[in-house]
Image (tube, rainbow, N blue to C red):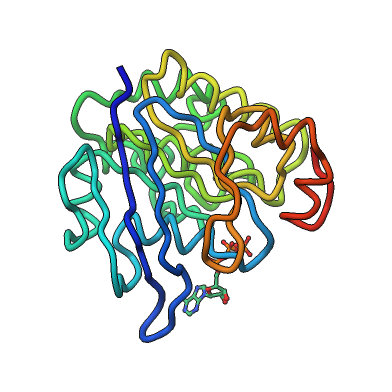
Length: 235
Ligand SMILES: Nc1ncnc2c1ncn2[C@@H]1O[C@H](COP(=O)(O)OP(=O)(O)OP(=O)(O)O)[C@@H](O)[C@H]1O
């Protein structure tokens, strides 16, 4: 049975008095794999930040599993099962890999799952955050969010600036963490082809609004439609 995990209804939000998202409505069902794509500056990061309570909500409502979270603080949203992997990664540089993970561990999350997902992190468990490569830092950022036992994982451009071989490893990890519809995953990504391969549903954001919301197959089969929306035929 379809169960709504997250919904935004007529959301207008931004920074200070600025409106970046405009009257945006979106429903994500439990177990969905959503690829969120759009040009630079379209508002994708702002959308994830708004779900987490990190922007100013001017109008509209946000519900998590039917409960209104519109006015909850970010840590309260995290406690309720929302997990954001920010573009900035935000790992603690002075802590080791394992300390980064255990410092936020809660619920039924486990170090074992994180290490099974990213064996490289287990090998580097005693290394400090600053000693890690870019790819390892991204793995740590993702694993750290998983330590908070999120039901909904919001990934903000996790592949950015990483070598193709690392991107491939990360995509495999996303497959594993979303397997069996266990978690709901929203993947914001400039690498549209990778995102569309992973997801079953695509959401295209332009100027703070959703201009396409539907199956990824349609975009994969119609590169001209993708090109119209995001500027380049990526798929
Ligand atoms: N902290 C902020 N304060 C004010 N404006 C911001 C802030 N962060 C982003 N913006 C503006 O909000 C708009 C949307 O930016 P956002 O980062 O959400 O886009 P994006 O689709 O994620 O793009 P990118 O792929 O470049 O990250 C842009 O015009 C940007 O300049």
